[in-house]
Structures are given as structure tokens and as C-alpha cells.
Image 1 (tube, rainbow, N blue to C red):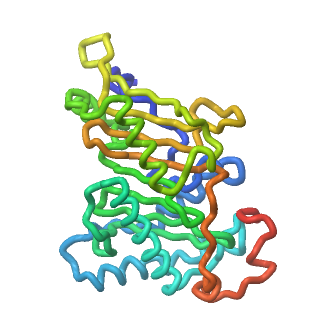
Image 2 (image 1 turned 90 degrees about the vertical axis):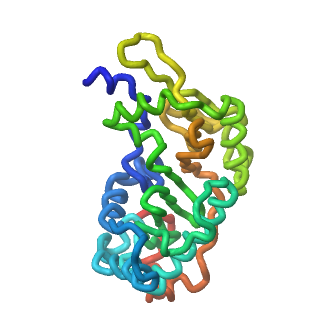
Image 3 (image 1 turned 90 degrees about the horizontal axis):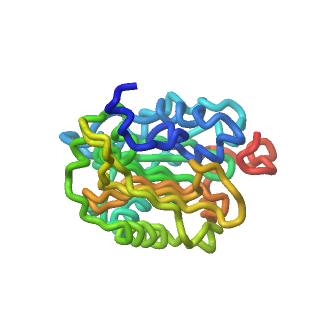
Length: 297
């Protein structure tokens, strides 16, 4: 290992990419990489600028139709069909929630966010919900499951931005830190509560684990603080591996923003599906496509 890489922060090994939908929970029920891999296939690569607005939205919605049968049958609870009506609904649903997060977290993104700003879009319908994600302006990723925000990434500042980029890591270590530890914690708590979630509801500990990153400058053996904080809320009623946390955030002292968020708590309230969900998918709910235990084959 290069000596510079040894100074990179410890990054969560379970994060397989931008849209790591329910990676930890899926880890025990099915291979988490299978979903991430499928979504990676679904996502587009264009940047939303310099184009016709209607044509861009049409490309977002139609570029996925060739992948509708990635999960035959109802394996893993996924529905082997997709329709334009459902994709329209999913895209607008995600934009509504992303706009809400943008305003509550004061991310400073265009307001309102529209499909013009979406550079990547993917959605997989399930028998009990749907997994979906968008990337905005090629940088900000929003992942959704069970009708709620499950993860968010600022791909220029979250932890994985420094993987294999020691020069960037050391360069940013010299930038001013605009947040104290207590200010970063307050920002993270406010962000969690703004989503309508509470420690009591999620059954997580009131006091999270928190650490500020460190960087060992080149030619030195003494670490110096890095302007980024990692915050983990653990369950209050059971032990977990040190790397695991049902609620995880990263806060940048450079941007003074949440740059990573993930909530995979089993206690997150589920948002009911729309009453016309099956009609949008061109199906009728049956015993075959509605498993007794959601998410099970």
C-alpha cells in the first residue's frame, strides 16, 4: 500500500456505491451487490445541461425499458415489469422528496429541482415498495426506499471521494474547518429530525458515536485534524459490529453541509404505496406477486 494511502480515512467497507439501497439489511437476505449492480446498469450517464427539456425527460424515462426483466418472477420481491406511467410517478415522487431535503438541509441546489437537473435515474418496483435513486447535476445522489430518503451523497465530499485520491485528501486537510464538533453534531441532529425521524421512533441511542477525521501530513508522523466528521447512531437495544450503524452521517467542515447520509433502521415508518400502484405497473395484485412476507421470494 502506498504510504499516502495509509493516511486516508477509514471508509465503510459495506458501501458499494452511490445507490447502496439498504445494503446492510439486504446483506443478510440476499447479495447486496446484486441490487447495486442492477441499478448501476439502469442509471444513465448524460449530464443535464444544454439540451431540450422535454427530450431529456423522455430519455430519462425511456432509457430503462430494455431492462424491465432484470428480475424474472417475483424473486426477492421485485416486480418483473415496468411502465412509463410508473416511471413518471417515481421520478416526480423522488423530485418532490429531493426538493424537500434541499430546502430543509439548505443544500443550496436549484429550487425547485426538476427533471432538467437529473443526470441519472433508476427505479426497481417491488411487491411492497420500490427502490429508486436520482443523481442531480452529476454530483448529488438521493436514494429512496419504502417511500423515504434512505441515502444521500455529495460525491465530491463524502468519504469515498478520497478513495485512491491521496492528493485531494491532503489538499483538503489544509482547508479551513468552519464547524466545531458540537456544531457538526447539532447540524446532523437537526437534519435527522427535519426528515420527521426521531431517536425514540428509530430506537437508536440519543448520544451517537462521533469522530473527526485525521490526516498525517506528508513527511510527518503527527496527525492533524481533517475538516470532516463521522456520526453513527447505534441501536439502543442490541449490540452491533463497530462498522455498522442504522443511521450514519458525514458532515463537512469545509462546506458546512451534510455530505453523506444513510438510514437503514428496521424501525423506519413505511409510507403506504399509492392506491393505483399495481394499475400503474399494468398488473393486478395477486397471491403470486404479493408475497406474505415483504421482500421475501
